Length: 139
Image 1 (cartoon, helix red, strand yellow):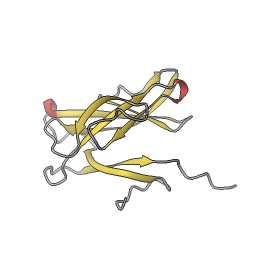
Image 2 (cartoon, one colour):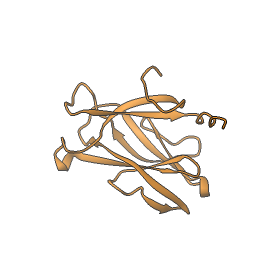
Image 3 (cartoon, one colour):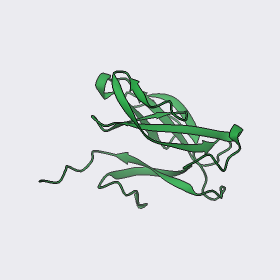
Image 4 (spheres, one colour):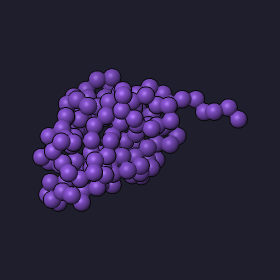
């Protein structure tokens, strides 16, 4: 992609906008997306809640990375969250489409991203990464 995502050599497949905080939304319009990481496998977990992605699940410890928000009336492109049960390698995916039922994943949620031309609050660029991270630098 051509948008900067700043993730140390990861290539991003897609990007979209979300809110860093729900402060600019009426409480009844806020949709939270909790993001956590499994540091042992560098896999991610996405849950539609403020903090529901933190702690132990499926035998894996999930560490909170960030919680972002969208709105129930958001008008950006659809994004889906998919889940793949695979023991210690259990993971979630997020894709900029309305279906995540591929590559062994089962769709758990769909939400609309924020349209940057329709919202005044500062938006957070969400980058969907693909592939593997670059190898660590040699000592």
